[in-house]
Image 1 (cartoon, protein in one colour):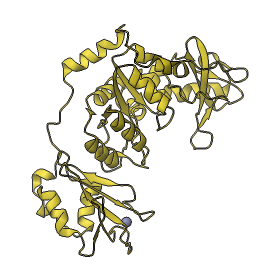
Image 2 (cartoon, rainbow, N blue to C red):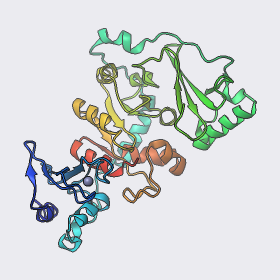
Image 3 (cartoon, rainbow, N blue to C red):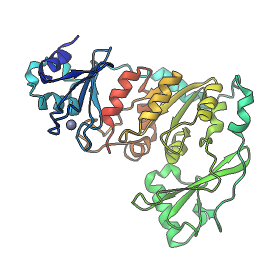
Image 4 (cartoon, rainbow, N blue to C red):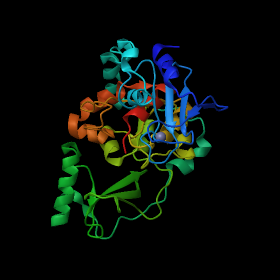
Length: 352
Ligand SMILES: [Zn+2]
């Protein structure tokens, strides 16, 4: 046990209960709860988790700490709300490890170069693959044009939206249709067929932010053909990020069983990169853990990681701010299979 856990044990209220699964529950000090809805759990790695089951509490979203990370932000505030005095904790625990393991330059160069590899994988489960790699053809919305050739005012706004996200998206074959004038359409081609499209709204607001095509290919991942070409396969949630980074995208925060099969059957190194948003990272985290895949836990440059100011929720936001190469390096330098540690990082870095 370390001095941080020791200090927490001293400030846990006297009125507490211990549950079968190791949680210590007591009245949450953050929300004035009186029904023992706060829960504290020590992890086998010498850290802890805390969460409150009182809706609306600041700690409804779990927080936590592990010895290699500094005690700051929400876990540190929790200690103070519990009545703890920060000066009881030795200085070394307040700062994060200054020498975290990072990808070396040689490994990074190797990874970049490997892009052109033509190595063919060994397929372990060919019987599964028909449904995974072949999808029915769909049609584009009415009067669809290539975005860059469309000239209406709305189409120009759509072009601006794309270029504002990143100038590197210029020339990508997006489409535009007067049927969805305030959207950019991203078509998906697989085995020389148009197997789907998704339309992304160019204005603020959640309503119709994404429109999926009719007969949506549920188990399709954008860029999934790349699993045959790359020794390393990065999977994330958003389409634009996938276009920019040459990664796969799942169009959301979950990965279906068939997608898991495809990723496992390709025999490559699989890395999942969830969005740092609310609890939405959870499904990716769980899937990576279940399959022994890697997780990326990037500290995006420009996000201080705990204050919430300048929060960066995904690679796309980091690319707008820091550029593509910097973002790639940050992501690829952050891989881990320490799932407990990753859980803590996602909990700390995610915002609503
Ligand atoms: Zn609470």
